[in-house]
Amino acid sequence: MTTPFAPEASGPLADVVVLDLSRVLAGPYATMLLADMGATVIKVESPAGDETRTWRPPETDGESTYFQAINRNKRSIALDLGDDQDRAVVDRLLTRADVLVENFRPGGLAQFGLDYESLAAEHPHLIYASLSGFGHEGPGANLPGYDVLVQGASGLMHVTGDAESDPMKAGVAVCDVIAGLHLYGAILAALHERSRSGTGQHVQANLLSSMLSGLVNQTSAAANTGSSPQRMGNEHPSLFPYGPFPTADGQIIIACGNDRQFSRLCGALDAQEAAQDARWSSMSGRNAERVPLRALLEERLSAAGTSEWLERLRQAGVPCAPVNDVVESLDYAESLGLQARAAIPRADGTTSTSAAHPVSWSRSQITYQAAPPRLDEHREEIMEWLATE
Image (cartoon, rainbow, N blue to C red):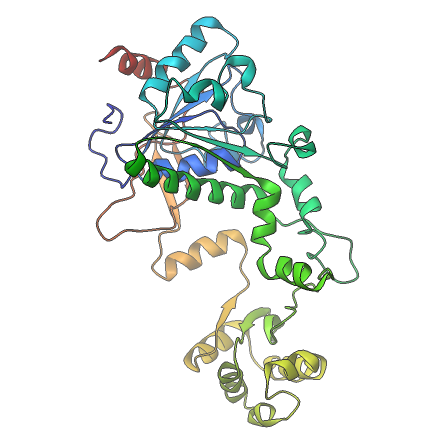
């Protein structure tokens, strides 16, 4: 389905129209990824706007940087779902949409006749994608789904922080992001399946299940042994050395995933004898005897600064990296030849910058055609589009 908004779009989803009824983070993150790949995403906001428009500081040019992080390449229209005229606009949008994305509390859209059961018969082609915090059925359906709640409930906080510290949340809303990624993948799979069956379906993701999946080895350890992993700070339960180590002027990350890499590390540190030491010649031994090994590594690393060790260890083939702040990380990525920033100019002369789309294709293109929209910015052009046959 073509639209007038991006007639030259060449992304892999250029023929897909997404009706985005989601707000805050998980849903908008998923729909932004679809928009980056060429999908036409119509962001339906309440007259008050997406909550994240008010989540500031920080802000640039009067706009929340939180909102800007997850809403580029979209068109905004403000509609009151409880108003008959606005509700009729949603009906017209549904005739054009391939995908509907929502993260209302389970059952919340039924009062407007916008739940899956109400729409499936009239729009059998529609892929209806729902996000919740703790599931769409059972007792969890009644619970609000904020990321920090799921960080606590999932065990993520339990395994994050130092052994002596209280449970610690991650520095970003990782449960929302992982749930958004799961939903985004499910939408792509449903679009592929529809190309065979011709029929849409209801796909559901929730933050708690997504985070349990995202805890990977920690969840596996708990499920298989019945014992919960514990906080280890920057240590890894199965690998050593694997984490930050102090240098003469800062810190460096060293990650040895096998005996060969550990041997290279020992050579670069002029500590070849450590690689031959029976205590440390195997990964299990290095894990069991990590305290004396850490003392040796820290003593050798104290002889030079971080930049010198980065060069020496890279030359030796030892996986290593600096410990950056976020501004430094953007510059670091670009120094490696990656596109880290997506800067999109607005017609008023301001610019919105967010993290660039992380994936590239050999033929299809990612384009940054529109900065995150002002509230109701595209009402006129959306209404003109709906008026066409």
